[in-house]
Amino acid sequence: MPPTAPAVAPAVLDVVALRAQFPALDGGAAHFDGPGGSQIPTVVAEAVASTMTAPMSTRGSVTRAEQNSDSHVLAARSALADLLGAQPGGVVFGRSMTALTFDLSRTLAKDWGPGDEVVVSRLDHDANIRPWVLAAQAVGATVRWAEFDPETGELDPQAFADVVTDRTRLVAVTGASNLIGTRPDLPAIAGIAHDHGALLFVDAVHLAAHASVDLVGSGADVVACSPYKFFGPHCGAFAADPAFLETLQPDKLAPSSDAVPERFELGTLPYELMAGTAAAIDFMADLVPGTGSDASRRERLVRSLAAVEAHELELRGRIEAALAELPGATLYSRAAHRTPTLLVGFDGHDSSAIYRFLADRGVNVPASNFYALEASRALGLGDAGALRIGLASYTDDDDVARLLDGLDAWFARA
Ligand SMILES: Cc1ncc(COP(=O)(O)O)c(C=O)c1O
Image: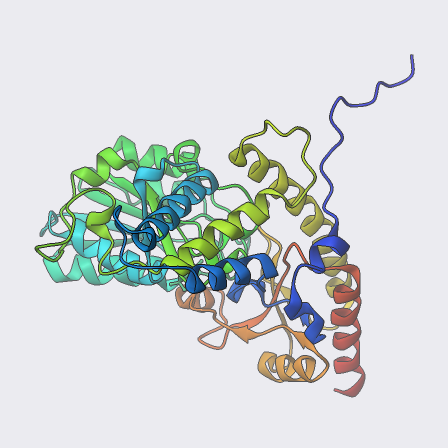
């Protein structure tokens, strides 16, 4: 019998059509700097601009201007909830993931004291380490470290099982390393944390641009992201179960709302950035043509991100194969399950010099520790780090060719 065609064709990303949505790509550079912040599609910039030129006031229900602002808040929460697998009422918006994590760490630490413990991972961006370390220190709680294996790039759940105890109040871990891409087994880590009565805080800032994030499915209690990593404006958000947020008492002004999630959102919200965030999430949901108009935005996001993963994986394979041929190349991104984020160094060559050399050729591949300072040191790269080749959904074959040509040119002259 001939094979039957699948009922639904696999979703494929149309990279040519996608790139046409990004005016910044006309600037001529090959952007491998997405992990630092993606380029922005026109539709997002227009959403920000049109919000700012429409009647706008502090959120409320009386005037048209108040209603406009209110609708942007509700729309952004709804979009972020779809992106993160959460409820709109549990989405908290803020200036950045770093600022939100500092705020939440201080709130949670009101209930910690000597003898309590927090667990952070050596793999994480410092934004998911230092707030917890400082909050723990301020109340005399103990910090324990879950170590990753620099040889394999893996962060084994056993590393958490080794240090989580019944005194652990919170475990903080990344959904994906912004330095080497490693994607830890979140449900397994959540199980370990919850078995000991601890909360799990997941930093999905790097992950969200590359794969579906799922607050409930991953077992996390809180999941944080930053829209500027996935086509949105520069801001941050986290999501949690609203019932859990009801149990927390952040510092707030006396007249400001005590409702959840408003209780956590200090000052006036950036309505225009919230409109841009909702537009970015809609843009992501529509990255691949739909199979039916009745699919929910969450379903469309999951399907589109699967297509993004497939596209990025294909390019990643080509780059990795080419890197293996280059003299003295060390690829630090080695975990079995990871984002297309390639940290690479070359024996005897200064990464920052290669960074500048490639930049002169219009190929943006920064070199740094990228604030994953602990991980960079654990990898033996000190504070300097190495080159990070970050793929994005808009990366195309020409970008890859320019990157590899640029590296060849470096070695031809060096
Ligand atoms: C993995 C990861 N976590 C946290 C952050 C900090 O995010 P924000 O700039 O929103 O504070 C970054 C920024 O690069 C990141 O890559």
